[in-house]
Length: 344
Ligand code: HEC
Ligand code: HEC
Ligand code: HEC
Ligand code: HEC
Ligand code: HEC
Ligand code: HEC
Ligand code: HEC
Ligand code: HEC
Ligand code: HEC
Image (tube, rainbow, N blue to C red):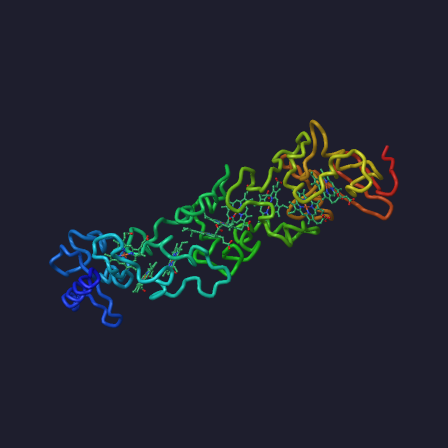
């Protein structure tokens, strides 16, 4: 009975509003609020008055073509469940738009789920009817990305798009450039160190900068995944080298004597332990190693920074019998893994 009446009403209105509203191709029609005498528009003074009045208005809305996206139901409008979307997202938008992530190897999940997570379907104060500008848009869903005491420059500048494709990209994590190329685009100095290095650090050369660095924010300078001392001397604590010990055996630093944990030993006298594991002035790894690459083997640097403008010379010479360090810190000393060399 109700359905019958409804259909009747619908038929009557359809005829009434046909010239202005019906989409003849699809036969879509719109049931008006029964209190409304006129079939003028969905955007009257009383109804949906703000639609069409913004700096940026979506074309079908500007055209008052509400039925491009909305459809009536069998309930009279206005009223609960009286309107529905013609289709679910993103299909709704893809009626008229190309999928902006089409063909991309790594489409943004947010785009696969729809478009209105970021775009208003109607209008707004920002170009493309975006709900927020710059990185604020992204932080609506990814607020955890800026968690950390220190925020990386481009992230701080709210510019997620300088590293990420918005709708997606062909690279992992939707990055604009693959792998370390992304970071080299701005950090040419580090690229220089790596290109000119005699020994390369495997995670730097074949891995990714973010094996050690947080691209967004971190509690540890310079945006490291774990603590690493800024100082040249620190009392030895395991936690001080958490970053390195993520991948390297800490035993090379814990025992005064070892016959296997490291090659930096005079037979079983552990020279890593000797230099690093001290309760007062333990040397940090960068006292000898260049973490991104170095001009001698074993990531050893020939000049060690840390004393103002003077780079301490470090010359590491390996022969079949022994290895000798010619350094600015002490007179030359040799070691061998096979037999104890007496340096006295
Ligand atoms: C391009 C597609 C599209 C067009 C054209 C469109 N709408 Fe919408 N509208 C939507 C979508 C999608 C939603 C649901 C939004 C949501 O869930 O966030 C919506 C929601 C609404 C709502 C619910 C309240 C709100 O704002 O979320 C109203 C009212 C509305 N539209 C009215 C209109 C009117 C009136 C027109 C014509 C002037 C119109 N719409 C044109 C897509 C459209
Ligand atoms: C009935 C067709 C139609 C539908 C459905 C539609 N749009 Fe549009 N949209 C247009 C037209 C036409 C333009 C203007 C295109 C131009 O100027 O090149 C436009 C422009 C835009 C723009 C501005 C960027 C541009 O290309 O100018 C965005 C963003 C946009 N639409 C998003 C959406 C979203 C999100 C949806 C789904 C909620 C949607 N559209 C559904 C027709 C449609
Ligand atoms: C994660 C947020 C987000 C989602 C989800 C999203 N967009 Fe966008 N879209 C943007 C941003 C940001 C821009 C502005 C890009 C720019 O300035 O380079 C944009 C721009 C556009 C444009 C303008 C043309 C262009 O590429 O610059 C169109 C059209 C568009 N989006 C359509 C869509 C459609 C259709 C969907 C759903 C299938 C969608 N967007 C989903 C964020 C999003
Ligand atoms: C409406 C919510 C929403 C918004 C807004 C949004 N995203 Fe996403 N994003 C998601 C979801 C959901 C995923 C998939 C689950 C996850 O990784 O958190 C995702 C995943 C990602 C990923 C990981 C992709 C991968 O392949 O691992 C990146 C990168 C990303 N988003 C960047 C952005 C950027 C940049 C913006 C701003 C332009 C943005 N997101 C805005 C919801 C959103
Ligand atoms: C300097 C370049 C850069 C900037 C700027 C940047 N990202 Fe990323 N983002 C990356 C890299 C690199 C990865 C991959 C990290 C990984 O795999 O551990 C990533 C991964 C992500 C992921 C997915 C992985 C995860 O950790 O959950 C999301 C989501 C994300 N970024 C969101 C954002 C948002 C939001 C912004 C802006 C506030 C932003 N990114 C700015 C480089 C950047
Ligand atoms: C768009 C340019 C840009 C890109 C791309 C970029 N950075 Fe940066 N980065 C900066 C700027 C600007 C600073 C200086 C401001 C600051 O300290 O955050 C910086 C600072 C840093 C620092 C601290 C430097 C110091 O001397 O303390 C590290 C570490 C770093 N970036 C790592 C990375 C890594 C890893 C990537 C790739 C995931 C990357 N950056 C990509 C612009 C960029
Ligand atoms: C094995 C871990 C590791 C990897 C991988 C790594 N870094 Fe670093 N990075 C560090 C450490 C540790 C520091 C702090 C160095 C110090 O205090 O001497 C640092 C410092 C930096 C700095 C600050 C300036 C400087 O020279 O001290 C920048 C910029 C930087 N890294 C960029 C990069 C880029 C770009 C990549 C990828 C090509 C990368 N890093 C890969 C561990 C790493
Ligand atoms: C993401 C894992 C990872 C992290 C973090 C890491 N390394 Fe490495 N490192 C490697 C790998 C892999 C190699 C090559 C295999 C090996 O020698 O164990 C290597 C090799 C080395 C070498 C020997 C180089 C050679 O030519 O034999 C030194 C020295 C070194 N790392 C120092 C460090 C220091 C110092 C840190 C902390 C700042 C650190 N590493 C953090 C993975 C890592
Ligand atoms: C006093 C200088 C010095 C300091 C400080 C130092 N190393 Fe080394 N390291 C060396 C020398 C020399 C070698 C080469 C040993 C050989 O092959 O003869 C080496 C070798 C290594 C190797 C290659 C594997 C091995 O043990 O032989 C790793 C990994 C390493 N160091 C990590 C570290 C880490 C991590 C730190 C800081 C916790 C550190 N080093 C501190 C001098 C140093």
